[in-house]
Image (cartoon, rainbow, N blue to C red; front, side):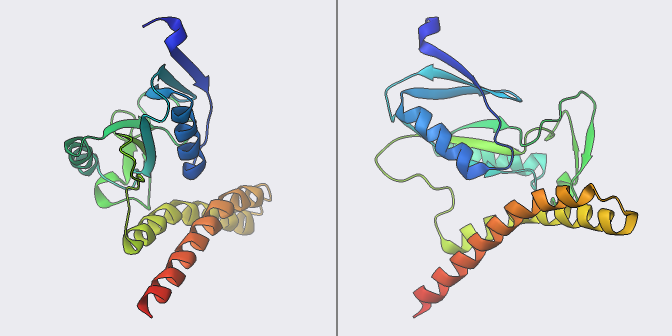
Length: 199
């Protein structure tokens, strides 16, 4: 494959999962398949337009063994998976405490799930929509999982600003409040849909 068949793009989406997902699907519609990711880049190979569909899943709340089992399950379904970071922290030998994660992943290390907070899931386009979570209950549960880290971080920075009089912490709390409110809105929207379906 020649250089004309490959494309490397520098981009960072952080926790904006739906925006990243739309961008990957737009790249697929232009005839590019994701082959590799790095901290700040995505590598693509040329392919037929719209041949692949992408979904992104937040997985930093799962333990390494749960992630392995989940990836094996997705592979058995014929999906391909690629890890992606959600933050810009790059180092070797680092640990991170994630109080919102499950018991097996509260402490993340550079050799396990550190900088692998997201899982990009690829499937061949068969004409059907691609959703990892298809029921309202599953979607609601997933949005609650997504909301939890932002709730923790927002509360942490607001409390730090209030008790320590570290006024610069308030803008950080506000930054984390934006995705928190977005995911809370999505939960509210799904709850409304559930109530409508009950009638």
